[in-house]
Image (cartoon, rainbow, N blue to C red; front, side, top):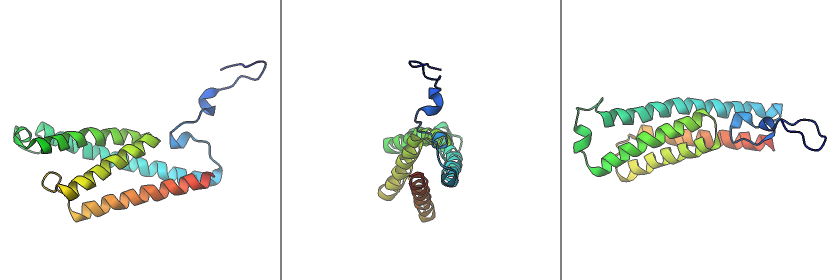
Length: 152
């Protein structure tokens, strides 16, 4: 609490602008889009935690025989390590419903799509998975757009 020249005490924790979606003040009519976006991000967070842990399972040899990861090419190893880190970082940001979480998730998913398109031997992905990723991106962008424009 802070008292400035005779004014009433101010609680700066509620007045400061946050990058977390659910902490932004909004009119009641906009709450539905912010609510939908927050829960969409939380569902994505769960999916991306599983995706990140599956990359760690490859590194640790849980899904493949022990030592299999070490004999693969350096490009494959770097790609798996990259996704093991960025997917979990993105998942944390998504769960917190923060702006940086959405950006990290977009970076992670676009990286996956680009690598799958240009290096299918390193990142094998089916057409259905790529279509699902594009649908998730479009859903995220539409929900974000509606949530942002209803606040104005």
